[in-house]
Structures are given as structure tokens and as C-alpha cells.
Length: 316
Image 1 (cartoon, rainbow, N blue to C red):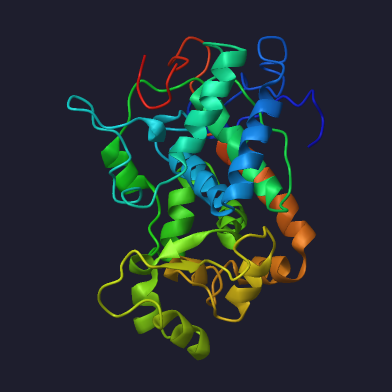
Image 2: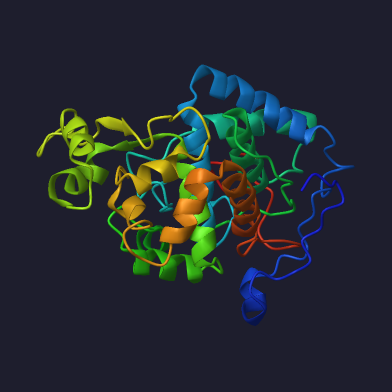
């Protein structure tokens, strides 16, 4: 993972080569055209996360929501205009997607160092990795060379990003559609070791689910009433500013905050892997890093496709 000569030459799913093959991505893509890129991104993320640790989770989520809608192409960063409908107001993103200003800041600094060279999609991929590292999580080599989409799809964002109410079967199916295995899904769900969720996303879980620790439900109900308070936040795993394996320990204790979280440990196919991660943080860290690289390889725009956006919020 630390090799600077790391090239992604395998397709995620051979049978779906046209969708998932990303042979053109390379960790050294900007080595000569923007040699200080990674330092610029890391420094900006360090300042942002030191000021507000939650931003690491916010940007990780942006990357996930970007990759699941027509690939990792920076489409989630595009603002709505009178003549353009982006993804920011899709149900999974409206009132919850955040961290756009951090990407703007990084983009401004990168443009000053090497203008019209680095895509917003690649900046987001690097920022997501750096946020995880800054909160104590694993690092990985980020393959680069993605280009930015000129389009976005609110309808795809509404239909292809898993909801907090998803069943295990739905989660496995939706990740499989992107070339990710059930194991990848369980590892990537561990991104919920950092950050917060809004009351509206877990209200049904704490009031109606039965596979929940009673004291945990009582604690969460105190700040998430049965009606109202939709935007009130709760930490996803209790150590929300530290990237660790506590998320899985909580699942084994039936203290998953979202219904979709607890589905990973509820008598189904992922129980054994959740138990493994709950007792072996190093195994989780390794699998999470590998799955992040795999997710980052979903349908990138490369070569002459797409563009290098000057401003991440608008097409050139």
C-alpha cells in the first residue's frame, strides 16, 4: 500500500470490465504536473479536521456518495442552478451532505500551485483518505487520474445510495451493483466509526426496532424525540473523533445507531466478519483501506472523458 509505483491494472469485476476497469488510474499520475498535490491536500485537511474533527467523516461520506452515483467523478460537488439539477438536493444529501467548503479551499490552493491540472474528483479521493488518517485510521495509496463529470444525476442519487433503513439483502445488492462484495460493504460501513447522524435517520430504530440494547435506546431517545428534532445529532459510535473498530464492538452489543448498521450483525451472513473486526482492529483497518481503493475505482472518467473543473461547484 505504501508503494509509489502502485498501478491499478486489474478490473474490479472482470465481467463488468467496461464499467469498473480503471487501468488508467495511477498513484503517480500527477508526479510531474503537480508534485506537491498530496502535501497541499494534507495540509488543508489537517487545518480543517483540527478545527472540526467531524469534517473527516463528512468528506468521507461525500466520497462515498460521489462514487455510488455514476462513479467517482466529482458530480456530487456541482451546485444546482436555474438550468442544472445536481445531486446536492437528492434525499441522501439534502440537509446532510457537508464539507464542500473544505474541497473549495483545497481546490483553490491546488489551482494556485498547478492550474487546470488536478480534478475535483481526485481532490475528493485524497481528502477522504487524509481525513481518515488524521483521526487515527489507516492510510492507503490513492490511485489518481480521474476527471470531472459535466453532468450529475439527482435521480441516481435518490435510487443508488443505500438508505439508513436498508436491510442486509438490500445493502449487499446495492454494493454488488457497484462491483463491491458483501465483505467490502461490511468493511466500508466501518466508516461509521466517525461522525454523526441526524435524529431523522435513526428515530425508527430507537423507537421501533427490537434488536437494540435497551439502555442504548433510552439514551438516544433523550435527544431524539418521537416527533420533532429531526436535525439533532448523535454520534455514530461513541468514539466519533477516533477512527477505530468500536463501531463493530457496538454492533455485537446491539448498539448500532442506524437500522442499516445493525443489519450487519443480526443473525445474517456478515455476523462472523463483524465479530472479527470487533476484536481485531488491524484486520478491519487493512480491509477498510483495500475496500476504499476498490470503491475509488468505480467507473472513473479518464483520458479525454469529462474535464478538469476550475471550480468544483460548476462545470467549465
